[in-house]
Image 1 (cartoon, rainbow, N blue to C red):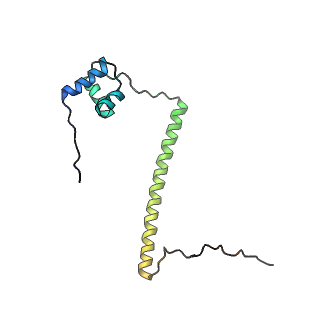
Image 2 (cartoon, rainbow, N blue to C red):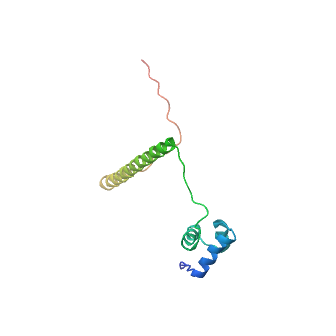
Image 3 (cartoon, rainbow, N blue to C red):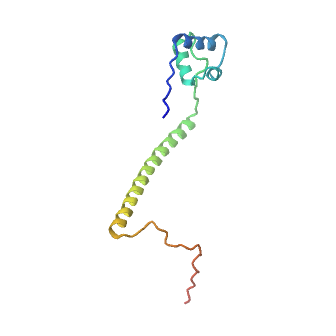
Length: 127
């Protein structure tokens, strides 16, 4: 089993990266690739040590229709999660019922009844 490696960066190293971001104009992506440091870690260091802060902040601009649609989707997502949880409970209940039937009656309920791949003959009804 391999041990997980935790990296600790000195404060001088952190400040050096922030200075490269500020003075040399390197992007967070470039610093991330160069020094193998995660984007969130770099953003935290920039927020903490930078004189100017991050160059870009994410701003989401939405129309009222977009906001309404987002609320609808969130409500639908919540409803679907509840439905999924109910279905999972139903599945567990049915599996448990099958296990009880198998134990009490000695029947393998899960076995496939039709072993051949032939289709049954169609029935014709005469009046």
